[in-house]
Image (cartoon, rainbow, N blue to C red; front, side, top):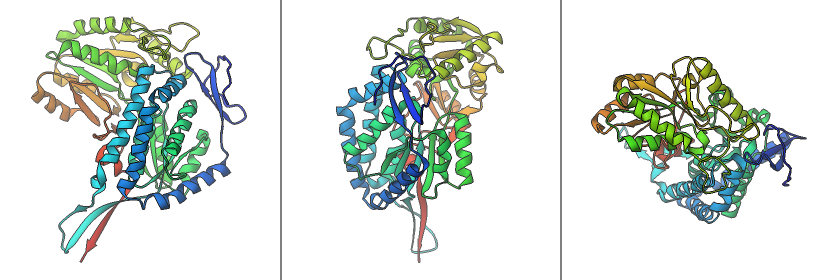
Length: 470
């Protein structure tokens, strides 16, 4: 299935209904995958629906035993699976292995949480007993992105399946090797046949999945534009949906913050995964009294980053995942510079052949230019001054997005008051935004709706059923 051939072409080329996986570093075609047709798609959905009948009657503990086995496999195969991630989407190998380890933690968390996460909730009413139970709904369709190909798939699938549902995966075309590896993990862990099903389908067939009466819910992690299309389709067919979309996360540094830690963590938050992270720190909002010092430190840290082969432990940042993503970030930076932004470092490709974009820092950034108004999905930082904490909050909220936010100050009482004013699904005080199986994850405004992870995420695709007993 693997073809050793060097090419210079966009990653999404489909030849005779095949998807191609391309290594972003070498630009070699890794593999071609046959797409299924609509008849085959309907058969797979039917099998997934039939698998629900046996899966949902298992106890929470019984379902958990399968995910405990998966956690063991993930840890045993973390180097092998990490290498698949790096070869398909270009993140450095250390980050890829860490992604697999985090997936194992996720499986353990839900497997060990006991049925308490779904325990019926009792309420007083005008009868002898009344309570709410959380029952699974059936097949749930997950449309997943390429940037964290294992984590974001399992982040959606594990709690959804632990609630008793089955899962249908449509993964991004450029990470089909990851999609197949995930499906084989379910097989190797001994899960019942078809409770997790990988669908190798083009975007054009996605609406057919949503429309299928056997599919009961839809979850998407992706861009705002993708969320608009998928949420509209789910709405037409009255399907429950969860949308985890883009972000333009503020990273607020007040004058009394731990300076060195806030600078280093900020660079890590922005440049992780080559800047291709929805909850990355994208807009650095810094109090004026420390602004010049902060800018100089950021510039130094960015210029010291080592770009190169993502398979090498010595590399700090790999290439961007696709040529079109490189072109888009290049366009956003160039247009912003034309409109008055100043590029202090970076601002260009590493060379004309590779998919590398230099770590970039912009100042003199104002509303109305791309790097202020739009999500920047690449290694680009912008620094915006704020006169005081209140202005920092105003700037932070001046966006259509509301996914995450970081706030740095040693005044915790002030930080908590400011956190209440931030329009975001999560606020991390003196730390970078991240996802954690124990905490709900999701956004506000046009960063989406619904929640993943924690006790909130496991209940998203359940029937919240009232039982009233006289």
